[in-house]
Image (cartoon, rainbow, N blue to C red):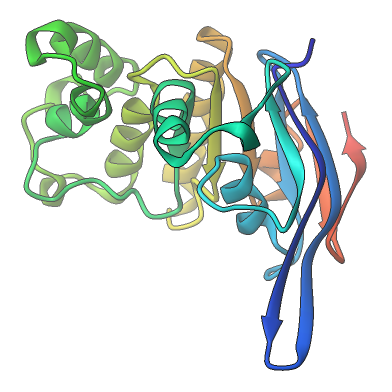
Amino acid sequence: MPLFHAANITKEYQAGTKKITVLNGVDLTIEPSEMTAIIGASGSGKTTLLQILGTLDTPSSGDLYFKDAPLQLQNQKQLAAFRNKSIGFIFQFHHLLPDFTALENVMMPALIAGKKKHEIYDKAISLLEQVELGHRHQHKVAELSGGEQQRAALARALVMDPAILLADEPTGNLDTRSGDIVFSLLQHLCRKHNLATIMVTHNRKLASQMDHCRLLRDGILLADEQS
């Protein structure tokens, strides 16, 4: 049984009298611990696809399944709980809360889920240490470099022990060295925590280090470029 399956996903927009098809019958199956890169030209619909896979957006048609359970049957409250528990997100922009410390940011998804600070403190500290930020846990966002901010976002994405990590251009705003560090940590932690990972990227060098690389072109997700 696959961990996650997207079946015949389409996404269309109406622009005046013209219909724009962004995704056209996309199928994607993800197994546990599998790392998949999705590449494609700018504007090809990669981010739209990732948002649909993460239930942040709704497809025009098609179905999503998590462990064979159809997600389209869940209401918005159920989907929000599913995202909080089962999916970790990393975006191109870190989306950390500026008024909070790195530690508080990492704990935030668990606090939203109703956990107490004392229940998750040690785990959040451990995750910050795993992304090499243990010594910076009391620093606020503005006191962290761009690479450090993205590493904090990675730790935050893992705090709920998700089954799937969705990463949208996680190194896109970073210089080469910082980007390589973030990706190396992401890859290491996904292997360590047995996370299924889907990463949208323009960086073919990074994509080549994933288990699979899929190309999104003209709304269609093509077969692996390499495995």
